[in-house]
Length: 117
Image (tube, rainbow, N blue to C red; front, top):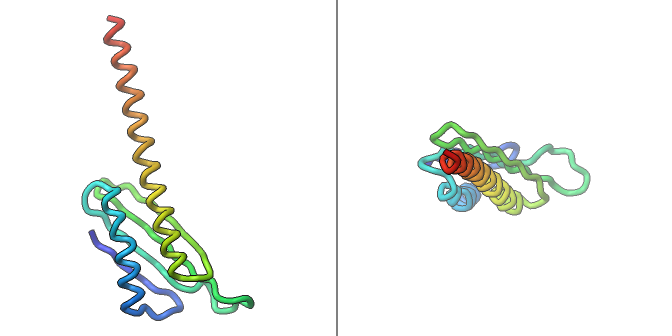
């Protein structure tokens, strides 16, 4: 697994990089094999009137070539990182269940054809 972290309009501190890596390293248990994770964190713009708005974006590429993407904007950067992690896990799990359902449906039809013969 390789995680690349990019920051926009903020300084990437070691504590922030460590927190991001720790939270997103658990994504690999939902994918098969080694995956590449690209993370972009930072502020959206510098001109907000009511506080700051932080953005976290995650792109996951699996060894099979499938790509998943999630984006979150929150007023707290750590909250945005946590939210984007739950979004990407939900997306990966959903794709996995769709492929399993399709496989089971096909196997059921094949079994019906064999019984009919």
